[in-house]
Length: 183
Image (tube, rainbow, N blue to C red; front, side, top):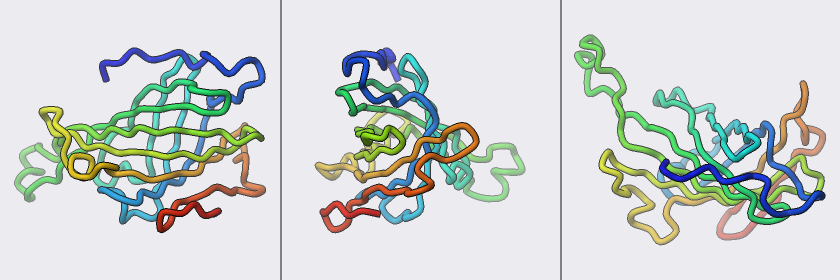
């Protein structure tokens, strides 16, 4: 990622909602490479200053490292995040493993997410787009062939000290058949 990490403090004023902290997300893609996955969960850490880390409960299938990225405020309760990870390709046979090749790099995965924090500050809803880049940085997969790319939506809850905020009434929304529905 060649972009400079933007300030997370810009705009919004003193009463603006904050994104800094740990969040647990459920995502559902309506198109693209992740559309068939109906139980995708992510853990995010949004740091003061605009950096972030993301990890999925699917990071071991296939083995991939966490994603790293940047985020910024775009309104009193709205944020943008962009984060990348390195997908891997499966060994072609047992010989690859015995010779030490294992799971080799297979380009980059790029997520771009627009986040709206709820008024209580403990949950958020988001829209997300996923793009696969090959080793040369060329867009491949759904993002290269569809105008909306690989896209979806999510709902998150902030993790607080020794407990999950929103566990009392974990509500969010999902998009099904082009319509938003409460989940």
